[in-house]
Length: 249
Image (tube, rainbow, N blue to C red; front, side):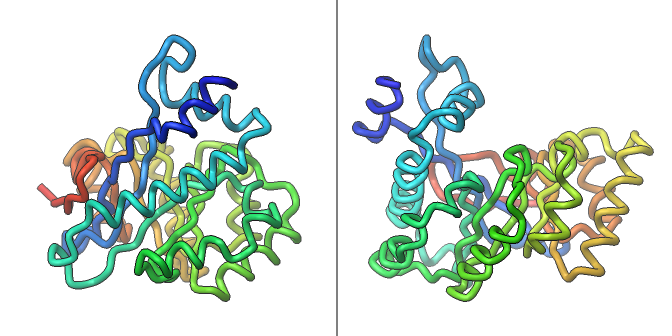
């Protein structure tokens, strides 16, 4: 806990931006913001660190801290002349934080306004690994955010038991397919069938799909052929502390 408090106090996180590309044109439409601590004896990797944060009583404080440095560092590093359209920013948020009344007080809108960022640029990315259980309450909260211009993405779809119910109730603007579904998809019939089902659901619900974890040309070719809208992964652009556009090889 002392190490976590030290990280927050000293802003001791490295912030990376990974491009998300439109697969039929190669245009970089936005970035996922990734905050990673330095490797220490207590936190041997990023996943261990975030697992601890999620189980602590510091989730709300840490999420607000991450939101603030993510947005401020983006503005510091982004060069407006690189793209004509303002890019989307995908900000990872623990689902329970959105239910906290303190997070709904308008502080996010004030911060965005001070930085010159429009709410329409912000996509709250909710991990499917943190199961949502209070669906009706969550629907109301998300409606409030959407009325302000924010959009919602469900991350890690395909990695957990709660995926289908989460998609049906929360009606996200974006579905992010978990990398476990994308890796070697060109060779795996079961993965292909599941991804095709999700694509069909997305068409019916006017939801756009982002395939994560694209590392090989064969994976890229398959998901392009299936009509997946967007892609993210090392083959298209690695996370970088500078804000750089990606490219389709």
